Amino acid sequence: MIIDESTLSIIYLVILMAFLGVELIGHVPSVLHTPLMSGANAIHGVVIIGSIIVMGIADDTLSMVLGFLAVVLGTLNVVGGFVVTNRMLEMFRRKP
Amino acid sequence: MTDGLLPILYLIASVTFILGIKLLGSPKTARVGNLTAAAGMVLAIVGTIFLYRHNGQPLHNVTWILAALALGTAIGWVMAMRVKMTAMPQMVSFFNGMGGACAALISILEYKTAMAEGLATSTGHSLATMAGLIIGAVSFSGSIIAYLKLEDRLGDIRFGGQQLVNNGLLVATVVVGGALVVGSLSGISTLYLLTVMALIFGILFVLPIGGADMPVVISLLNSFTGVAAACGGFLYDNMVMLIGGILVGSAGTILTVVMCNSMNRSLLNVLIGNFGGASGSSSGGSSGGSYREVSAADAAVMMTYAKQVVIVPGYGLAVAQAQHVCHQLEHELEGKGVTVKYAIHPVAGRMPGHMNVLLAEADVAYDKLVEMEEVNAEFPTTDVVLVVGANDVVNPAAKTDPTSPIYGMPILDAELARQVIIMKRSMKAGYAGIDNELFYRPNAAMLFGDAKASLTALVNEVKQV
Image (cartoon, rainbow over all chains, first blue to last red; front, side):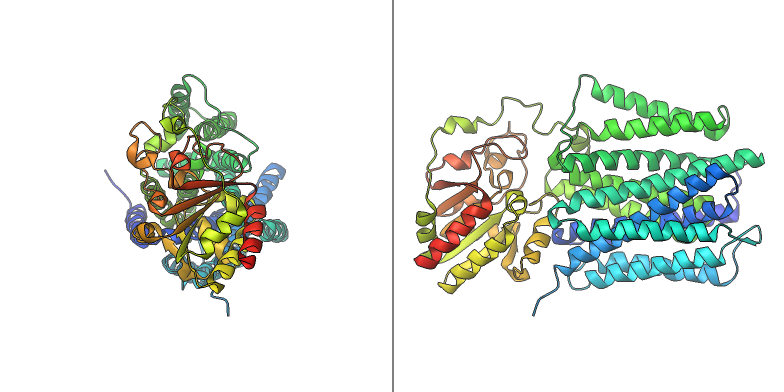
């Protein structure tokens, strides 16, 4: 079976990232689980990049409409995710 | 298909995501971590709009893209700023669903384009398209159901043979998806059928799961969306999507497992949704019979003359928006020389760490919040435990009654204290729907009423002692 170079390097990347994700979360106090989940939620909003690309190469009306919708939803994920996380974490700031 | 600068921007963004998750893991650096990842995201988005090249051409429809971004930002910002801290879990679920829907739409468009241009796509490419579609759609419909459940607009719905139907539908979805990948099925209408199947599966998958388990489900769907995003990354050879997606996929999975562990449940057990259901006649707590009531005035006296008071806050406190009054009570008691601490169960509130957020909102000092293992050692020497709107997390049945649905869940040993005062609206069972024998113990007394009203009464009484 032949796997081309770029697919192979993607497989490497996926495996390394999977381990990294496990390592990063392993020792987090339960206090921070909610903000962490919320922060991770905002980060997977990176899917918006894909929606920008499909929108940017769309040329018929249906694709434009669906692409527009995808970008709006992706933005909701990113902006909402980061703002909500920030609001939660502001609560943890030690007040004077 | 990109020029020299964009990959570097993507690289920087990827590093900020990794760094962001790392920094989110400690209370001191969490805020910086979130902002770091957000900055990386802005970099990646702006870079994509202006620097991405498709077959050597820059992206078109830029005005529309910017308009969509502006619209999404406005809506997302307002929603996120307006939501109450108590409603945070469902908000996270909602935003997660949006990401899932976005991933599913990308797959649909990608397939449409490939069909229109009559391009032969590689198996890997089709696999990523179908996986992104299925996972994204499941994540979307599942998250919306979770959102509705947490908003109390939807109850647990179970019917006979539900597991069979769910598993059957899952298998069918995967088979149709697989057929589309290998090419034995094709056409845009088949793709729409697949989308509908995945959406229905998402709904059925979350419907039977009890409200108390919703955080686990949200966390799981969160990691699903991560994987769906990574599929998109594979479609476009886009490193930042791959890294962000897989990172969240794996971190989210571990977080899900950790959350299950802190409730001493297996993931499978949560997903089958038998919490508080199957065992029916369990928990013989009600045989305990009579309970004692206490007035706010008496409770105030007990607490004022105590050396140490431990407050056990639960979701009831949050619903009543009573965290500020609670802080006031703590302040009054401290003024009388009483040591006050808060015992935080890992799943107090509706998500791990939710209670900490709510109390921090009310200015309660971070070091007054004591975690379960630590505070359990202190209960035998504590004079008064005040349980505010919590129930299952102090239910001794978790230790003593093997037939109880919550048997094995670590609990706060409140019953070991000299006196336990339980503030509740009524004798109704808790979230898990089971009775609590603690209420019938000789050292326990009930203070009925809305948490906020009762706490206000307590504050006034303590002032007068």
